[in-house]
Length: 139
Image 1 (cartoon, one colour):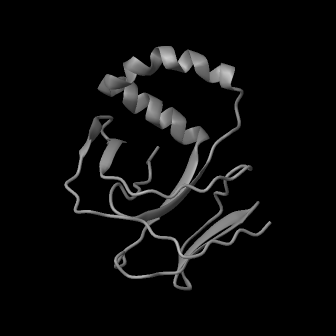
Image 2 (cartoon, one colour):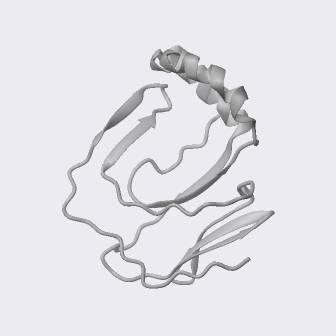
């Protein structure tokens, strides 16, 4: 199985869809979490998860110091991410409702590499902020 590579740093638009599971079914996984630090085991777990969690993403290359108009069109069959009227990502991987909106600026990272290694740390970052002039949500 070939795993698709996704943007790992910078600014990106992305979505994922996973099955809805009762929380009690996830509890045994907490006991196995320390095993993820072992490279061969984390590789296997990543491949197993890829069969159940569908995701898609696209890198967003633009000057983030300028104002832009961002839009997300989310319907049951697909998601479309646009910036300044230009579609950046149109995917059939639509999240299962209810949908939540997450916006943040962060200089910390944690990621599993394709080799199954965990990378984490803090990036040097000048002062940064997020400013939202207007937000509209339609049902």
